[in-house]
Length: 277
Image (cartoon, helix red, strand yellow):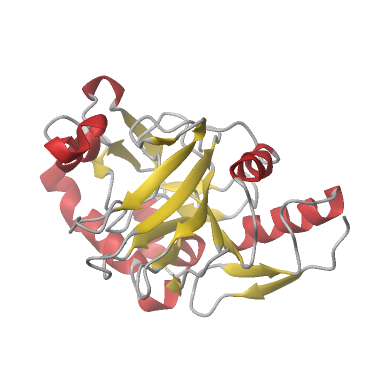
C-alpha cells in the first residue's frame, strides 16, 4: 500500500528512522523511498513492526539474494535467518567491537536486516558509525595517502578453529573450511549512492595489501580512531518491534554487552552484495 513515509535523521552522526511504514505491505514507490534513505544514511531503523519469519525473508528478497551465514546457527525451519543470541549465562556477546559484516568475503554482503525478538529489560543497544562522514572529514593529505591503498580482510581470527567462537560452547562456529580472506580498496565508491566511503574496520582488517602488519599499524590505527569519533556515531536503543537495516559498505556497528544475566535474541538476514571498487 502507498504510504507517506517520513525519514527522520537519528540523533548523532549515523542513520535515520523511517516512519509511517509497514514492512509487510510495500508498494514500489514506498520501496523506492526506503532505498533512497538507505543509500543516503548507511543504516535505517524501523519501529513497531510485526514481521514474522516469512515476512522478514520476503522483505530481504526485495533487496536481493540472501547471503546465508556460514557461522551462525539458523532459526529452525529458516536457514536464511541467522540466530544472533546471548543466553543468560553467557558473559560475552556476538558482535562486540566495531566491525563490518562479511568484509572478509571476495564479494562482500550488501547489508543486514536485524529484527529484535527477545530483549533485556535494560541495555543491549547497538552503536553505528558513518563511514561516508568519516571519509569526508579526513584531511586532504590522508585522503591522498589512502587513495590507492587496498586492505587485507580476514575472519580466521574470529571464526577459525583457534578463535574465540571455537570454544566448546560454540562448536558450530569452528569451521576452518569456511574461513576466508579478501582484498578490498580502502576507499570505495558506494554502488548505490556514488559517494566515497572508508572501507576498513577493526574487526576484520589485518593490514594493507603489500605491507606487513607492523608497517600497516600506524595508519590503520589512525583511520580506526578517526572513524570512532563521536561525531560519526549513533546509538540505537532497541524496543519490541524494532528493526535495524545497515549497509556494510557505508557503516560500522558494535553490539553493546551491558546486560549480564539477561537474554537477548535477534534474527538476522544478510543480503548479498557486489564487488567493490
